[in-house]
Each structure stands twice: as structure tokens, then as C-alpha cells.
Length: 200
Image 1 (cartoon, rainbow, N blue to C red):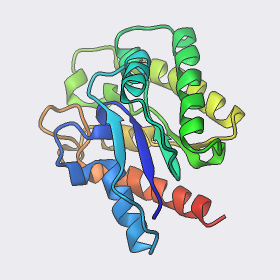
Image 2 (image 1 turned 180 degrees about the horizontal axis):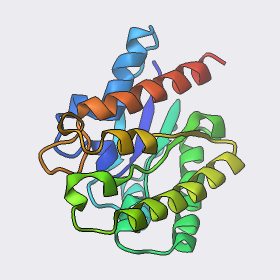
Image 3 (image 1 turned 90 degrees about the horizontal axis):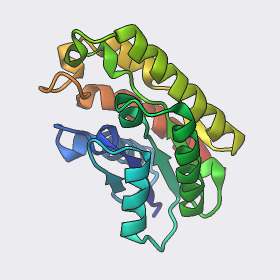
Image 4 (image 1 turned 135 degrees about the vertical axis):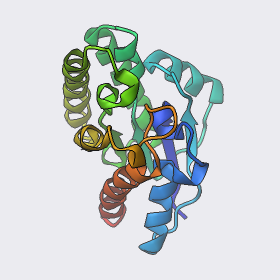
């Protein structure tokens, strides 16, 4: 039985969707359909968290065990609160190193997901959407560079959120967060990477 730790914020816990619709639970279901037995994901994520808040919660959880694979998706709230890229880089690197330790020091078993672009959603009406998009791109460039430099895997999901961010079927009632339909896209991409990694 494989184990899975998901670290993140609202996009990991699945704000306003049933638990089985968030991307970690959908990925586990898809893996089981491929006859890869994975236990229910352990999720450390809360809506609104920044990198330092996720790090503080990880310390509080005092996790002793390791996991077959770990996902990390964090940074949108750093961008939203106007924090610097340099601050993000430092704190993201610390989180990535922690994730690698949780993955039994196997960096290829850590999968980083890119940060969605909330600026395309109806929630962002009246805001400078181009500025948000540029800042999200800058954050993602930093996150991808650090992930790949440490031999972790990286999944791009931002473009999907840009394509679907105006479609009511792909967002929930708050007009900001993704619905289960959007998370299904992420889960499929994650499943493909995890299945390949676990079979090595």
C-alpha cells in the first residue's frame, strides 16, 4: 500500500468542493483504477496559507513517517499579499527540502504543481489581471526552477486554470476556486506522473 502526503493551501484541500473532489483524492481514485493501491491522502493544507504558514503547520504536525510520494502546491497567497519573489524562493526551497525528506529523500517522488492564475476568475473583476498574470508567471518560474534544480518533478496546471477560469462549470460558488472538474484535470496529470514514478 503506497502512501501520499499533499502539502498546500485552498487548491489542495479543495475550497468549497466535497473532499472526494479535491485533486489529491481524485488522484488516489485514479491510481486505484490503475491497480496501484494508495491509502487516503494525508493533507496538510488550509485556505489562505502562505509558504511560512504551511511551514509552521508542518512543524506543528510533527510528522515522523515518510511517504511514497508528496505533492507541493503553494504560493498563490504570497502573490495575493504582495510578498516578494525572493522571500518566496527562500521559503519555497525550505518547504521543498522538507517535502523531499518526507518522500524518504527521493526527490523524484516529490511533485510540485504550478500555481493557478486566480486573475482570470470572476472574483478578480476590477483588478489588474495582467499584473496578476505576470506575477503568477514570475512565481511559477521560481518554483519550477527550484523544483527541477533539486531533481523533483513539476506539473504545469496554470494554463488549464486560465482556459477554464471563466467557465462556471470549472469554478465554485465563490467565483474564485476550482470545481471538481478542474481538479480532475490536475488529478489526471498527477496520476500519470505518479504511476510512472512508482513503477520505476
